Length: 215
Length: 128
Image 1 (cartoon, each protein chain N blue to C red):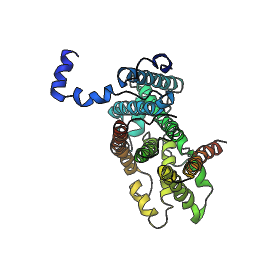
Image 2: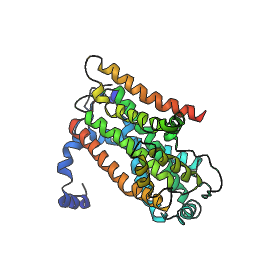
Image 3: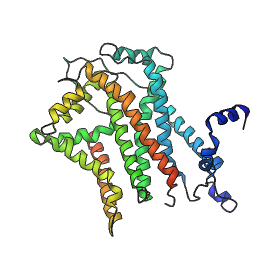
Image 4: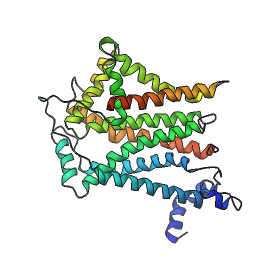
């Protein structure tokens, strides 16, 4: 390796713990249907990257949210591309998680000892959908407002605790500025963190248990 | 596929064989994304105007839930909003444990089909 990398390796000891991981042999009967999980992860990385860029311009306030999304779409150089990437990769993320889950199901890879990895993967899908739901409100336009109004009102139908739960999610009786900041915080802090931790579990278990090959 | 070429010579290693395929796949995934971004750029909806009636449309992956909610009214609404989605989620989470015993695989396939057909079927119904 080069001088710079050698220096970094002396600081962090990158090579030795990952040597086994990089030099291990891969089961020969893998095929291209085993790519879908990796593709979903690619879209997750794109989501994080484009989300970080969007957060530079987005303003999560009742009066400025809509305006700032307009500015991102119409005035910021390539802002519409970054926003489009964020929106489309959110859809692709979910599509490829579903396809990946179907592949895992068909190849029976959820069977012991990989039960927990299936559960972690399913939780990732649910977190991804929650991210999609919270992100949908952020443009603060007509469509977003009413979808969130209807979506959160479903929580209100739970017997006994529903009303209080809905109040807690909305931060008030109606969808308002408090809902926006709550959803923003969920969308950019809590849910990406949870997704990141879940994916770390997911990959760590694959690293330790190996790939379940043979379709 | 690569297998046919180096089947007899050596086993595939993660690095460089598999890693190069991963990077290739990531690039294809990125290109697929860029095609969609350029063909269908995002639009911003109208500004919030509470005086005008509006028919809410969720993201496509929540269409099934919106359709499901429409089937139950009044005090039974929580069946559509909570009970059935919860059954879907629990079936999904417990598939490794449903696949247990003699007819385990068949039970798991039935559970998987309920989730998949429920999701796709209700989504199609809501578009129609």
